[in-house]
Image 1 (cartoon, helix red, strand yellow):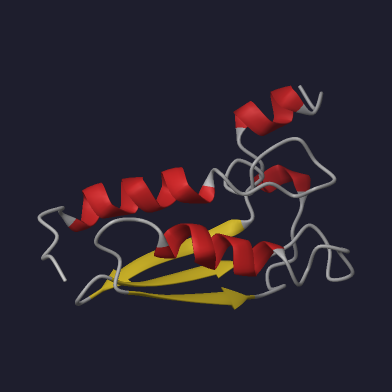
Image 2 (cartoon, one colour; image 1 turned 90 degrees about the vertical axis):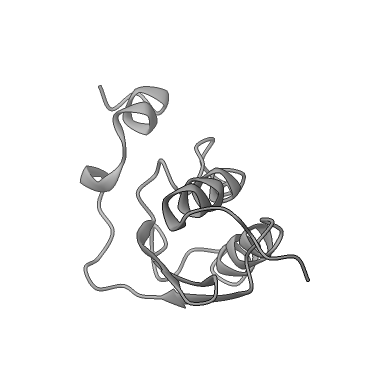
Length: 108
């Protein structure tokens, strides 16, 4: 195993880029821009914790999206382990979307 020379900030950027490759199948915007990622923490040694939500608890993709986020982040060079926690507190609202997502979906 090679030792990553990335800073936590650089690693977090890589993680965000990886997460941006995950889409809700029903919405043409990635889960990061949708505002579904509440928190990304990096613990020693490059163990990643992600807290996220879904657009709704009854989302048909509820089983797939967190697993896909975990898989994409695991593929980031330097990441040791990944833990994805799903929460519905606070509940998701369209206010959490980035301007990019709101524009894409016609909310602006």
